[in-house]
Image (cartoon, rainbow, N blue to C red):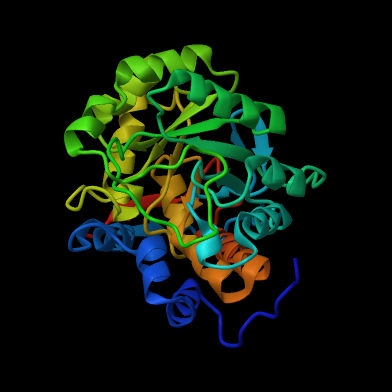
Length: 349
């Protein structure tokens, strides 16, 4: 892997987005960064973070400020993970290897997509010796063939992944035909030719989640929860953590924004279950707002793709470093020295 130089003028995630849009071809951009329908939910995700304000405290002692947090038995250096992103080779030849190495270098976590373009074993090997890296998790889509599902899970366990992230907000998925020579080595290929009725017939239910939580050799994180009742049901089914998410606005257009539902779900589980959030995170202040509203950590998706497209592994590292630096600055300006006592968050509308 050859280290690229970072293009000039990249000072914010918005800069990364503009540069990546000019760099990627239209088809790759639409797949990696597009949204469902009219893009309402994707836009609402961003607007909803802006609707919350941080209430700073002044003259607070700031010595010892840090961004550490506890999650699934581990101490994380910062509350950032890269969300599961399929087919990253569409963005850059470094693909998931570059993203994983960048996340490890920045002490952030990584959730590898089941639809990654790189074998899960190769990604795990690339960061295995990095003692300071964040958690390495593997994302699952439900497979009706439990034998195939068990085989994928066993591969992840044997490679050293620490948790399984079951995506539940895309029970039916349309097919995407990859360019010639690009494969999905961690999952059976999907033809995209199944009818909606066929897809619905094999969509997972709470029974499948209960089975997975009972039989999986790793903790199961449920990703894609927006309703408080579903949060309680996932908790009762044995989930180890929840990701409050609407798939970045890529599935149901018109679903509520993550920042709107996060405090309601935090109230529903009452602190008994760790929460993470994604969707529209673009600034360190957004990360701090998410923590204030009940999340233990956040995941970022599209921004990591922008960084990857712009400069491979170095671009992803730059995106994560920007977020972490902005988070530390926001904490200092709010009089907050650690994330166990975040500042108050209030809605403006």
